[in-house]
Length: 196
Image (cartoon, rainbow, N blue to C red):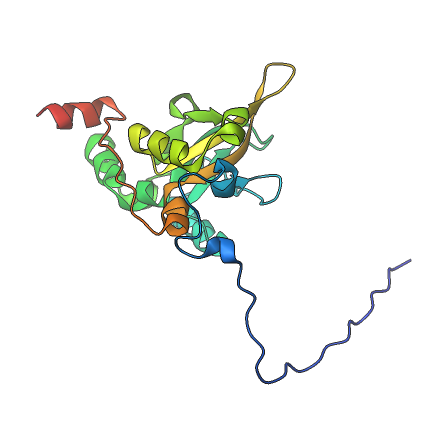
């Protein structure tokens, strides 16, 4: 038996119709003293996007465009987090360095080759974020030198689950100001370049 759906009534818009404007997303609408929760992307409300570790960079880019994001989680088929990959990973120096070190072409590079692996991902405790102010988050991002900070919750069994994300770009838009990230060596190659 098939389910019947109804056709909803639709009307033409009238002259003078405007677009709903959420005041919270206006530049400068948030201050450093506000609760950090206003800059926290909560995965209970917004679905995070993920991709398989074995897809090509073209597929990663296509999914980022389709989803309107600049960061994708890399996950197993069972949903276990393997790492994350960002727009900067795709179009920064990582692909060039990978080809120089491993050989091959850009078309042969997979998400797993450029992602930041789980073992290198840092995260904030959600309980700390809930108690923090936007200024605390800005200071943390600046010190960490990261564009994105993951937020996690530790479950009763001791396992961790990523509950959200904080983006420096999003905070910059809300504050109406630029956040200067500190330079940070994230790999031995980065450290070597910084020292030479």
